[in-house]
Length: 273
Image (cartoon, rainbow, N blue to C red; front, side, top):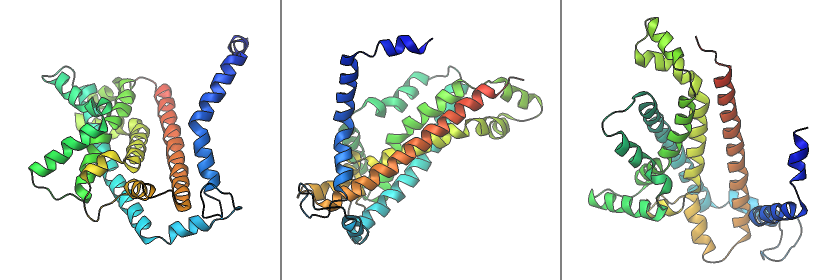
């Protein structure tokens, strides 16, 4: 009975608009994936199905080195952002109204709305002022700054829906606040923490703007390497690399979504004491 009104609102105009919108968003990606299997050296000429450009990527030492750098930066920055973002979410959710809360939350969420060009330039000026050599650690710090706010949003939403009587019961039974958090709260919010880590990892792997400001010799990430190659002309190998990135990120996003849904179900099933 509830499905009929929803179906009635799907007029031909709405269906056409939806189809055109989805085609505008995803048709270029579909074309890229198809042409990654093109045997021809010319990007715009179809020469049959082939895996030659995937083999070319796995034989390209420069691309593999950039991929390894991106994975290292993403893993370290995502881990640091998850730890700091979780602590920030706990402070905003459990600390109540403390002095400087508005300033703290405003600075924490600033990267969500601030253009990446401004963030990257600000970090570059900071590293130059402290005479820090740009390389792996500067890119990692920059990505941690960028992704920490996203982790905070994900974890804070889960903490906000968590029944605090569970923590209070643990403290009534003799646990101090830290032990109650480790034994009770952390297992309940762990799916959200994992989802936040996956989101931070994906954002770090995709970033070009901030990494271009903070990178240095020997620390070129894969997106920057791809961008430098594309400026000289699109090679079929780029299609293969982009297809692998799209597939990997799609798997991570689906996994993060499933983990987030698991977290919500656990919150609904957790009965108050």
